[in-house]
Length: 334
Image (cartoon, rainbow, N blue to C red; front, side, top):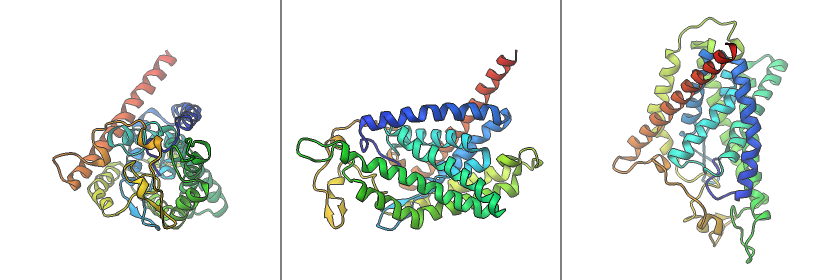
């Protein structure tokens, strides 16, 4: 679901980024008001779950791959506003360090995975929990529908590109697949498989945290006594160790082909036959560990190193954020 560089026009990227600015502003204000300072560093734990979940690629129908995002999971742990910030920072690290998702498309990726997914997933969880009284079912259905809502938004963003941006010869400048292709290509695998992966990941981790560290649960902060957080960090360590399993899934996620391969991609048995000019001549960033690989070390060690770096950076970012928020609050009180 990560939209790569140059699949969206610069105008589309600008619109999506501008749309996210008030969302980020609102989320930051709500986190400052709703969460105690000492809990803000733990948003980094939620972001780590998201980052690691996205490293476990699974095969999807059609020969592509997908992964969990964990947006609804983080919303259950820290609230949807914290989830928005957590997934946004995870996506930023992925784009800047690992080249996973475009830097120009960062606003669009955040709109889908850091805005639509957690807010929709959490709203549905709240509604279903009140109706059924069953947290597990509510979490599963909310997360399943949340990631499918995000996938639908991504499909629309892909699909409008060839309708709006073409060269003089009539070829698409950016993503070459219109809505008739992008929507089924994105939605069928997510409805059949990726949504289930998201639901299982959300329910499993949420149940584990409820059992071991219930004070981290957003709705239970005041009601539950702290049990300690060592099991949660142990779970993160276990997920890091298991991330190479994500390398077993072969194929490329739909809509994430490189400019050097898209001309040969077949849709309905027919290859595209050309490389859109925007993809071929677009902007690119040289990143530290492209595709979670590093020259001189093997694929598995590089993937493990990527997981460690990503998790460490997320923990540090939200630890620093807790100090910044605490410092401002003290200045305001003074």
